[in-house]
Image 1: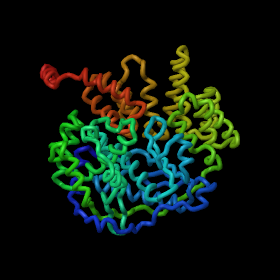
Image 2: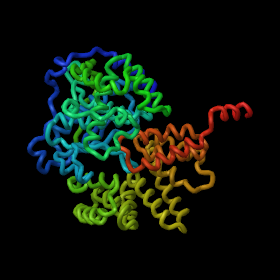
Image 3: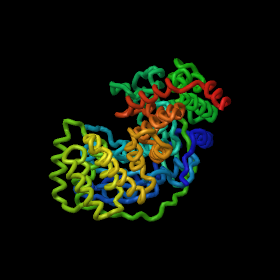
Image 4: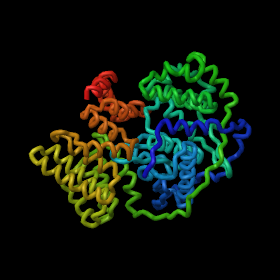
Length: 521
């Protein structure tokens, strides 16, 4: 049975970590014993795409075998650290997280054009994955990986409506983990220190609000991350402060004001908090805990087909969605590249996805049927074909019942192979919208299961909240959708999440009325 820890269990376990002995700043700054991530000269050329897998990660990389394996081991060690700190047993929940390692920023921009950061994490209906470039400082690459995986881990094992500042502050805190032979050091330093020492801080009421990350100025964004990190560091170091932080997060998750509640949590007035934190930053104590034992055995590395160099990153871009004014160009590019690899699975699946979303849907369905005929257990092809029929049903109302039946037929075949596939569950659930009595008990359970398997995906939460509201389970709907509102990065589902949240708040009944109904029943 997969195990997901509750927020209460999480903070109880982490409290033990907060009481771990502090280490002095001078001790913390000793050199790392781990070999840093490196990119060889050949990895900057036309290195082949490779794949390896650990219990928690599925890694794809065009960075050379040595860097791929080293990254896999470091990530698995970091997963072990988070599990130890948060008292999560070794049983995995959800699928291994796909991570794409690329040698240059240019490669990363194939997935997200214009991005300047060294990596990103994406959780959408299309896929949950991360892309990181190993170009430049190896410590930067490691921090990006650790930061984004902390978000993924917390969403998977302790989903809750944490305030935005703590979501980012927590990831910033763990991203600088230093692995020594027998110990791990946390909270040693952070890139934000230089900014905090050289810039004027924003008032904390602007940092602590639920949507503090939604800022148009780069200065405000940097202030949010830097001040959130330092406040998290301060609150987590001392057991008494950590206990107050625990009560604070529970109160905010229950609907409390994250600004008004902070003075009690921090133990100082809001206007005095900058002075206290500046003084704290001067010494910046940190934590050292015993290094969790590694259980990772030898890893197997396999080579991907030649088509990966042309299409693997473009395929991930399609899963995130392409802006309307770029679709024709992207479709033409994928058609041209896929034609180079007749019969290749990656090429045909990428082309099918592009045709289905932006081109010739009949061609997409023909490609998918051929893939399924070649391998009836190809769950991705089955799910994509079912989704294609759903899109077709929206455009052809006269044939909608028949097309939705065909869609569910594909989903059923996929379930037989992979009953815990969140996308299959979600697609099946929403394919029932519009039917009398929607959602049935079965459909509600299907949508709730999809959300449990991939709680990082905001759209899964929104669909589950909508179904709960239709069954008049408004309190559960509020709890389901609130983490989407508090996501510091927002996203395309934010407006819909806010609408569902406000509807659920408006329609839920006072507890007294529910109690009276229970008594009368």
